Each structure stands twice: as structure tokens, then as C-alpha cells.
Image 1 (cartoon, rainbow, N blue to C red):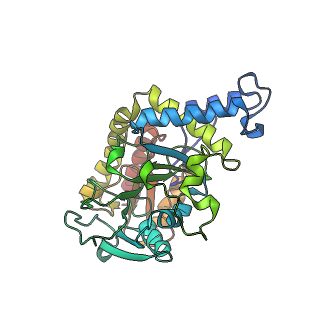
Image 2 (cartoon, helix red, strand yellow):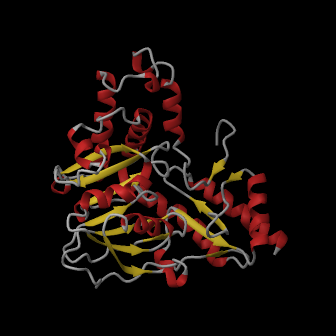
Image 3 (cartoon, rainbow, N blue to C red):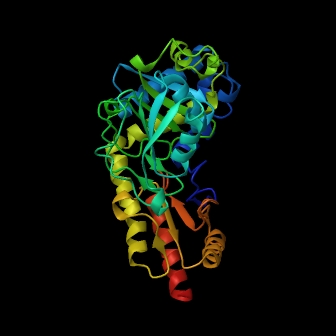
Length: 362
């Protein structure tokens, strides 16, 4: 690690690839001869139009996004989508949700403000430590969509396979696993991802939506900004977008392409996560909290025998140069978020530290 940087295991805002940060640094004062920083640049300028166009095209290339899907860069983060999804997609006023952790639970609560919500499966019975079987869900014929959080950041569970929606539109919150592995976009009606976990700086969400789902006949009380059509019709520039986040994300898209795309990234992520999970499976002091087949490659929660020992370990890791390993306040314990930009040597260094801690304190 260079520049005195530490290993940052934060769940978001999270670590970014060092080559990307170096490139941003080099362009900070004068972006490619423009005489200004991207943060100072008019979003209506030709220079910026090229930045956003390239960002969209690189993302399309990475994910093989079909032509009948729109890519939208929207402010507000993923949480705003808890409302935008039902506002835009609840044509019949009915939707089905699968409850697998804190973020799907929050999305359910928000959606209930806009229509009838059926929680068709839940893993609440075992504190969201698994993904329920979704091969034969009880989905009403008039349901507008089926919603999942494909990777629960707090509880560390991920979907090994998508649910059987019985022909209904699938909506997925991919915030904490976006671009971590190949994705068949055609399986979804809408994908969204807050970018601050696995792609760029906070303050923006990427929405990938099938064109036929973009509606004109919304409730007249829906704010203009909350309509997907507004963003689709204006190339994500109805108002001043989050120019800086789009620029940084564009850099990350190019970086991912340069290292071999999502197939290559997926192999690296499997390799990294294995280091951590192999340790947890062999440790007597530390235990993972998720059933093996549903373990996230991005967010790895684990615990010791007590909250007191958890706190001691967190303090020790921070002193040793490993930051943000404290588990979310709602669940406690510890959590290592090992997003795309976390190098394998960071995970190996953490495991070495935890092994040593266990040897000395076990």
C-alpha cells in the first residue's frame, strides 16, 4: 500500500482502486487541457458530455447491457430507489418483496406507502442468515414486480440464484455487489446500485431499466425528479447531475475493462473471499454468521463469543491499520467488506492478524 494508506474494510463509502485514484489526482487541477477540474466544469459542456457518454458506454460494454435498456445516473443513492421503484412500476398497485435483511426490509416499509405489498418469502426467522427458497413463490397474477436485494450489505447474504418470478418483472438492488461478477441484464426489468460501495464516491445511483417499463402515465403527484422518464428523456441531465461521481465511476468502468472485465473480477473476488472464509471455518475464536451457500463475496460478517471480545478485536485491528471492521450497529459483531478494490493482500494481512490475535488470546 502506498501513500501511507491503510486497509479500509468499510461497507461504504469504500475503498477505490489505487490506479483510479492516481489518475483522478493527476487530472485534478487540469482535466485533459480544459484548464479546470471536473468539479468546476459545466455539465452542458462538450468536454463533460464526452465524460458521461464514455461512462455509459463502458458500463454497457462491461455488463453487455442490451439496447432496449436505459442507463440512468440519478442522485440520491440507493435509498431514494426504495420510493422511485414503486412510484414508477406499481401500475396495478401490487408488488411482491423478498425479505432477506435490513435493506430489503427498509424497501418493503417504503413500498407500503404506495401500494399493496406481499412479502412472499423471508429469512427473518433465523436473523437473515440465509436466502429462502424462491422456486415456487405465491405471486398474485396482478403483481407489478418482484423485488429482491441481491446482496445484503449488513447481514452478508447473497442470492446464489435468482427467484422464480413466474413471468413477473424482477427488480434487484445490487448496490453492494454491483460489477463484482458477470450479470445477465435480460433477467431483470430493473437493476439499481448505489455507487459508493463498489464503484465510486457517494451521492449517486446507477439505474438500468428496460425501456418498456418507463411510463408516462404516472400519478400526477409524483415529483418530476422521481420519474424514470425524466432521466431517460434527458440523458441523466434533467438537472445538474452528480458530475464528479459520474466521472469517477467512469474511471472505474475503464479500469475494470482493462483488467479483463467482470469474469476476471469475479475470479479475483472468489479468490479473496476464500481466504477469509477458510480462516473463519478453521478458527475457534471467530465464526461466520451466514449459511455457507449464501455467503456474500463482498460483505463478510463474523463474531466472537461475546460483544466485549468483539469490541476488543475491533480496537486491535484499528490500531494495526485495518479500519472499519466494526459490524453494523443493528447486528454488532465484526464485518469485513472486501469489494472489488480491496486487494487480496489486504485480506491476507487481516487474516494473518486475526490468526495471531487468536493464538495470543485464545
